[in-house]
Length: 160
Image (cartoon, rainbow, N blue to C red; front, top):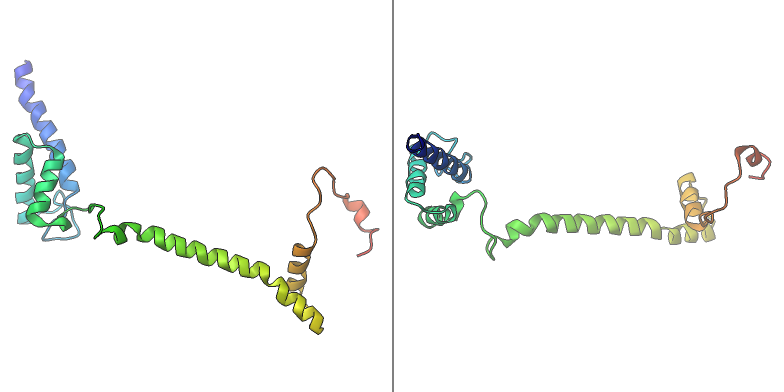
C-alpha cells in the first residue's frame, strides 16, 4: 500500500514546490504575470523546466540561480539586494525620511512663529484670534500635576 502512495505523494510535493517557485518567476512574454498564471508558450516551458529540475533533486535556490543565469535578474519578482538595486530597496526609507524631515521642519517653524508674533506686537499690529491662541498656548505653562482645576461654577466669578 505504501509503495502505491509514494509516487503520488512525491508528485504532490513536486507540484507544490513547482507552484511556489512559479509564483515568484515573472513571465518573459506577459511581464505582469507569474509563469504560474500565464498561458504563454515560454511560461509553459519554464514550468516544465522547473518540474524537471525539482525531480532531478535540485533545491529551490539552485533553480532560482539557474533561471537568473539563463534569463537575467528581471525574471525574478524579488531582485537581490546589492549595489545596483540598493536605490530600489532603500527608496521607501529615503522618501519617509524626507517626508519626516519636512514635517518636523514645518512643526519647528510653527513653534518659532512666536518671534514674529512678538515683533508684530511691538510694532502695534493687532493679533488675529488664532495668533492670540497660539501665543497663549506657548506662553502659559501647563498646570502643575496634582492640583485640580477649578470647577465650572467658580469660573464665572473670575475676571476674564
